[in-house]
Figure 1 (spheres, rainbow, N blue to C red):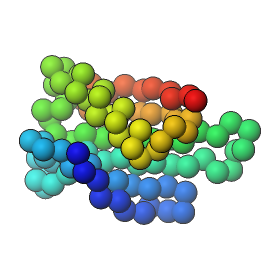
Figure 2 (cartoon, helix red, strand yellow):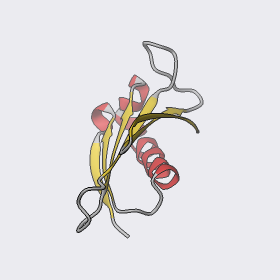
Figure 3 (cartoon, one colour):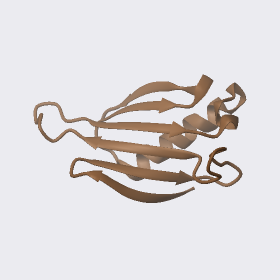
Length: 102
């Protein structure tokens, strides 16, 4: 798994996620994208909002649920670290929401 970073704004980052054997069917490029939004205004309960979108239809298939879950977990660990995170994964039948707390 490799990443390419693009800045969206001072409080958000966009990362393209490259995976062997998977690709975006329209562009042939990265099959996934992660958008990380840092909530810097509310210091009482700081969460990092992370959205992961997988565009490869093969990753939308229920047979790959465990793979999507493991990929999303690894992406959060690598890109966000151990901060409190609200996660939203968009991958067809494998879409889900999660909360990571220290």
